[in-house]
Image (cartoon, rainbow, N blue to C red; front, side, top):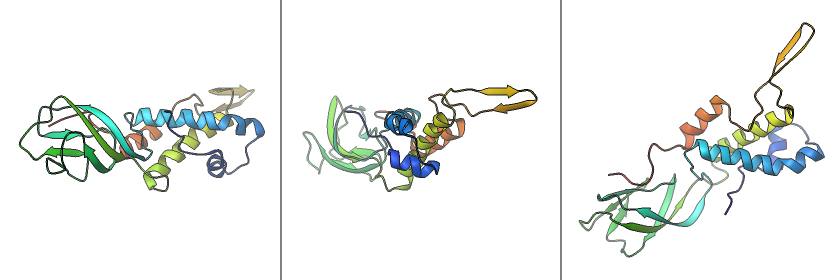
Length: 183
C-alpha cells in the first residue's frame, strides 16, 4: 500500500506563495509523493505518517528487550500469544518481557506509530516535500548554471533529491540509529 504524500497540491501552493499552472497542478501529486518517499528514505525508511494498529512481524532479539522499528510509537495494542501481564511498553520504542523469558523467533505485534498531520514534525516533512517540488517547478530543465555575456547565474539543483540541509533536518527529526531488535 503506497503511503500518502506529506503535502497536497493546495499545501504546495500555500508554501510556494503562488498559483500553480495547470501543468504544475497535473504533475504536483506525483512529485509530492516522490519527494515524500525521498524523505522517508532519508529518515531510515520511517513511515512518519500515523499508522493505527499496524501489525508487524519482527525477529526476536534473544534478549528480554525488543525495539520497535517505526517511530514515534503512540501505543502497543497487543503481542500475539502473550497477555499484557507478560510484556510492558516503556512509552517509547521498547517492549520488555516481564515473564523472565527472552524475545525469540518471530514476534507478531500490533502497534500505533507515526505523526498526525497537525504535529510539528509532520509539518516539517510537508515543508521539505514542497520545497523539493518547488525547486523543480522553478527550474524544470534542471539547469545547473547559465551564462549570457557577462551575466552568470547558478541555480539550485532541481534533481529529485533533497538538499544537504534538508537531509540533515529530516535525519534529526525522524531517523533512527538501528533497526529491528537490540538488547
